[in-house]
Image 1 (cartoon, one colour):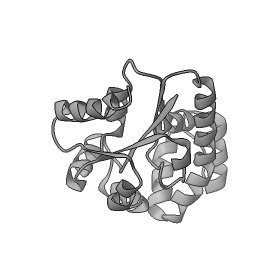
Image 2: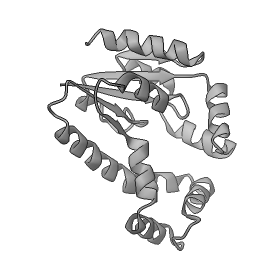
Image 3: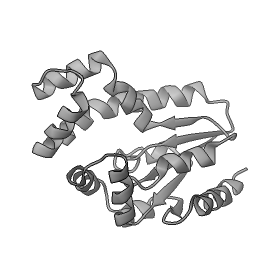
Image 4: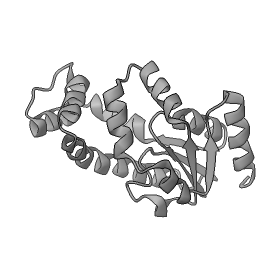
Length: 188
């Protein structure tokens, strides 16, 4: 079994890259999907709402974003709640799929969360900041939150030193696919 992690800064194209490289090769775990499920879980919403002292309702995501933008320390509080839950799901995924040749895990904060030791190969997806901001805004994200989240992550130059492969994602989908397939061929 080869465990491959994909990471990168916010809106660098990690989700697209992970879908491309894992297609027909092995199961894919997405930390962002786990977080999305948490945000739809009533118990999780209640717990977070209590922690941040607001009522959990349909405006939950909006309130969380406001809490983070109002006080950046709230991002750390939120991560202390979310990260252990995502890590637990990651370990369940690894155990469940231990007989597969390849396992792919898309984890935005892989390096920051000190998860490197669980991976055989780490691929860093890199994109220019201006392009990442444009992608983020196209998904209805706001500038302030982008810059806050981006600043919260390690700089690309530091993360790249800790990764086995770097894929620049500033061009077309075709170029991204070609570069990813060249990497996976090294291990097939």
